[in-house]
Length: 254
Image 1: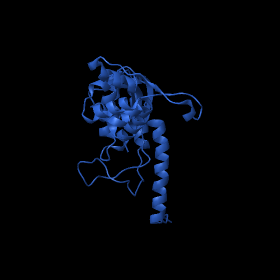
Image 2 (image 1 turned 30 degrees about the vertical axis):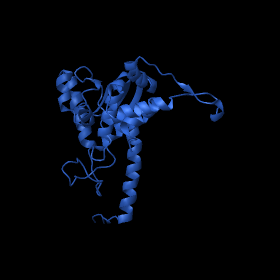
Image 3 (image 1 turned 90 degrees about the horizontal axis):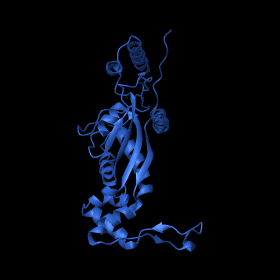
């Protein structure tokens, strides 16, 4: 006898999609990752880069130790310096923000990298499979999205039918890639058989204002979710490094 296939109820479909969304969040944390490496400058650097025009220099103010839970005095910007940063951002006087510099290490699928590399004011150095022949790692989303009704967007809501399988194809591609290398084919040609969901890694560095421009664009609701994921991760780190400047440049990314 053939199998009796029962249709899922709407509630079952919703629960399955919710579980898939939770699993996808966990997977993205492992596979798509923006890792802070290093930075130069602070909010005060922005202030003094602007004030040098008038041969002026600002310094940090110290908080009252009685206002801190750990009774420690902390360095903060003065109210005047905070207003200056907000003025610079509002009127697009961006050059003072360019004196702060940040580096990240990014891990993401090739199809995501090819979207983000378009930001020309950010420095980019990527793993090259012309020289590297490590076993490829492939990105596989837990949630497959449907086509968007609006052509300006790349995808719509999650598909109700999540029965999409690409594991077999990925294994075949990996075996083909390895067989080409074993046959003596050079790395720069063997890599041509690898798909767009192959994971890649790169160093991404740039000025405070350049990263703000990228995040303002890539966190919009009509951008590809995987690129948005990286932008949100960078946003979190930038808030820690430059709390006043970042808020002024991004208006608090949601």
